[in-house]
Every structure is written in C-alpha cells, then in structure tokens.
Image 1 (spheres, rainbow, N blue to C red):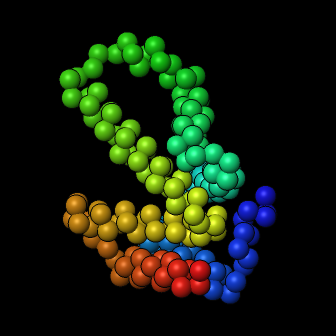
Image 2 (spheres, rainbow, N blue to C red):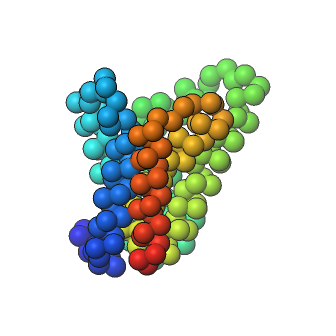
Length: 178
C-alpha cells in the first residue's frame, strides 16, 4: 500500500505542499475560533472518512492502470450502492409517492453531483500520481467556501481566507515541482 502512496517520491517541495494544504484546511475548517471544540464522534467520522478517501484514491489509481475510467466509475457506483439495498430497499424507493419535480431533481443530482465529478476525478487520477491527486483534492473546501461566499452571502473570516491562500500556495508549489 505504501508504494502507490509514495509514487513519484517524497520531495521537499511535496512535503511543504502537504504542510501548506493541511495547515490551510485546518484554518478553513475553523481552527482559532473561540468556541470550536472537536466532538469525538465527529472526529472519528472524519478520520474514517479520510481513510476511506485514501483507500478510494489508491485503489482507483490501481484499477485505472487496467481499465477505462468509465468502467472504474461503474463498479465504484455499484459498490457504493450495495449498502443502500439493505439500508433503504428499492421497494421503499419505488413505492413512495413522488412529487412531479422530484424525479428530474433526483436525476440532475445524480448526474451533476456524482457521475460528472467522479468521471472527472478518475480521468485526472489516470494522469496524476496518487499523492498529487490527494493534495489537489484539498482544494475542495476552498471551492466550497468561495461558492458559499458568492452564492449564499456567507462570510469568510481572515483565518479562513488565509487558509484558502495556504491551500492555493501548496497546490501551486506542487504544480511547480512536477
């Protein structure tokens, strides 16, 4: 498992990029706010999520060496859907009364929030090392915060804006190093 993780070697620039993106995300997620205390269940869920994302990236990279990105996406979606067969059986889903706007909304959500982003992720992962893809994915909270600022009028604190700049600096450094 370490071989794909260290693909391309650990350079000082890659290590600094990791430190910048990690520190930036810590600031983006609220470090330094007066009343933010980590919830143990939330912290555990976050760590499990990070481990799952690492597994997903490493083994998707491995699958992409053999298979077309759409094939990998298909099987990733099948395995992601399997638990829901038991948690929320299809009979419940199909037997419920639907408001006329729900099926098209459901379809749009499936396409624009799952199929397109994962397709793009797999196409990018095919051309990047796992460590590059992982560091670039730290841009997600920055994009989410910027979108919330523009679309919803959310405010960014100085620390959050500084965190976003650190993430961008880390990714720029990674780009320059590769």
